[in-house]
Image 1 (spheres, one colour):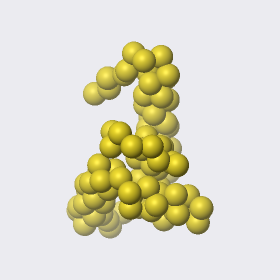
Image 2 (cartoon, rainbow, N blue to C red):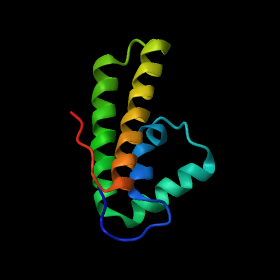
Image 3 (tube, helix red, strand yellow):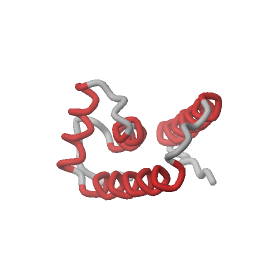
Amino acid sequence: MSCGNHHETPCTEVLARVYTYLDGELDQGGCSEVREHLDECGPCLQEYGLEEAVKKLVNKSCGCEPAPGELKAKILGRIEEICGEIKAGETTGTGTSTA
């Protein structure tokens, strides 16, 4: 997703860090980069709003128990894998489709 405009922090990088940002796990510099990008990029702000709503819904429904560390690691590993596939597709111009 991109609005087509140049940003200091690319849309793909911001969207890859949305959950880390929502969880308050980014350092101050990372938070500033994400906030600045969201202030100037409508499509990313809309995606952020959707992710924030999903997180709140999941927390409301499942917030009583923390997820096991092994599950978190597995999910984060898969997200990183998919992000790598997307970046590789952008670099080669072939694109990547994941389901």
